[in-house]
Amino acid sequence: MKNASTIHRLNVSLDQVFPPIWRRIEIESDVPLDFVAEAIRCAFGWSFTHGCEFNIKQRRYGTPNGWARFDPEQDFYARERAINKQKLDSHQHRKAMDELFGWYQSVPKTQDDDEDSIPSLGELIKRAGAKFIFIFDFGDCWSHTIRVEKIEPALSGIAYPRCIDGAGANPLEDCGGPRNLMAVFEAIQNPERSRNEIVDRIVKEWVGDGWDFTHFSVDEANQRFRKTFSRSKR
Image 1 (cartoon, rainbow, N blue to C red):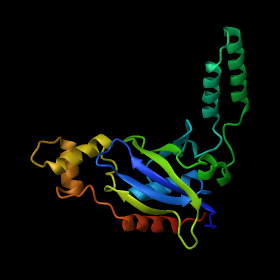
Image 2 (spheres, rainbow, N blue to C red):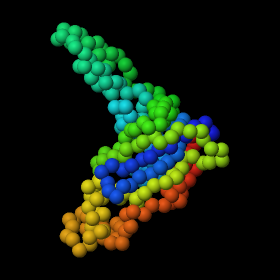
Image 3 (cartoon, rainbow, N blue to C red):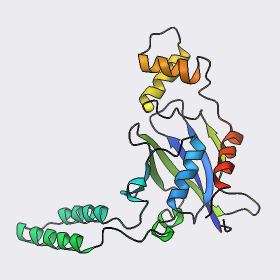
């Protein structure tokens, strides 16, 4: 990759899970959003087999819409919400909606498949303190809250993206989501208590009774980063 002038330092926390599972990563400001998603998946040990998306300023960018900057359907609903907020009489509202439907019918529903169609992190998130959401696996629905801690100059000689801190073991993909993960935590802490069939199978076949769900290794996370991003052609 070309050298970036600035980086975003992101604190990424898995929602609805305790003890907390979080990662702090640094990534170039000018990379496209699909690249940011790859970095988050590396940091948490997620696979690349499930769909995912960001929710930034009430707009979705992800695998369902090709990470696209241009999404007529989302634009339609955003404009519809703006119309409904206005104090319009029935005639004015009908006219505004007719114009909106006319616009929607006229715009192309696809765009050229090129990298420039995907917005960059820095294009959408311009200030420290901003928050946005990342969803991984629409079935289990793993929600992550992302807070931008800093936007600062990139350091010479540092390979980005990288993980610099974190806590908690990698979550168990395909376990059924945060509720089942918490049940596994409970089962590990209290093995004498009864547990449902799914949790019992996860404990016995996936992790074992001695699993340390608080363990996190920056080195292991960065091994995944190096393995993934050494193959990147961006």
